[in-house]
Image (cartoon, rainbow, N blue to C red; front, side, top):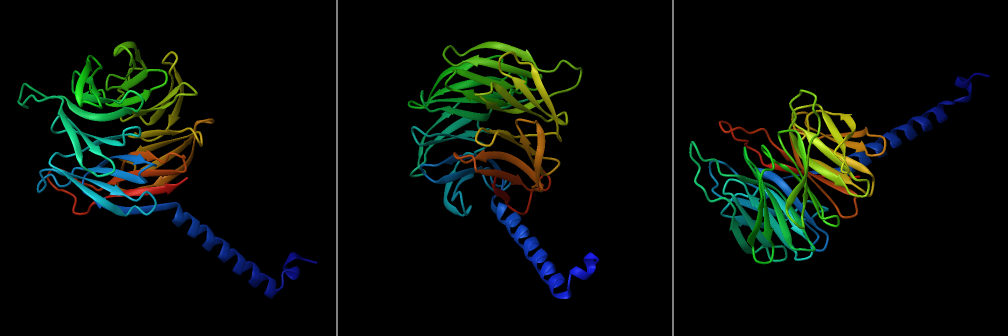
Length: 353
């Protein structure tokens, strides 16, 4: 007897209905996996606090009509705005000190850093890091990436320029403790291993630098790839337990896995030119934004294979991860130029991993 005879019209109808229900369930789960909401123009870095149950998004607002910016406090589950903190300076970079419950913001254009009380949203203080006036011959260094050492209440900030530095700020007094000079051309990437007292930075010279946070001295400077190609390692994220760093490259279609022990390249992962990177130790995964490609890649940190890709048009920018490693957040910028500013606000995406 053929299979066609075994499958009666009633059974075929049941199977078809079951297939449709299954497909519908799959689509519902896929839709629930990602939540996307508009937040404000000029969305950049984010910071999370489990204690405050808050996700903050730094936005620079309109170039033409807004002198300052806004920091939005969002509900991490619904992405609804629960507070709008208006700032006379435009915020870009962001980090959070869990011990002091302080939100730190980098004001790139103004060469400053601002401290905000996470509970109230009040400004606790501000420090101008480079007060030189811009001219044809003077290019003030610009704060970009920030990391906070909760234990020592210290904030490290990259000062980006042709001769970059890292500013070391006392979180208690809001005073400059030290300036780590000679970190290379456009030293943008920054990551901290607080327990090991090691700070890492990357630059447009294709270098990975290791800094001792006890002495603020550069103890290692490694040309990651001497292959004759142009490399700009924009950002990095650490796997401290595995002694690995994941580096994004805006010039080459690859993500690098580099040993923190000797700076050697452990793996080259094929991927579009990339911007932000974040390692998730809970799931042993790496997340990478590909601005021009409009995608976010999920990389298996064991096999070094791209296991999943999320389409996040237009320009996925920054990343943040929940403390339990189960939820990823992405800021997504709209197409905008100095001549033609975006008419719609930028978005924040919440992805359930």
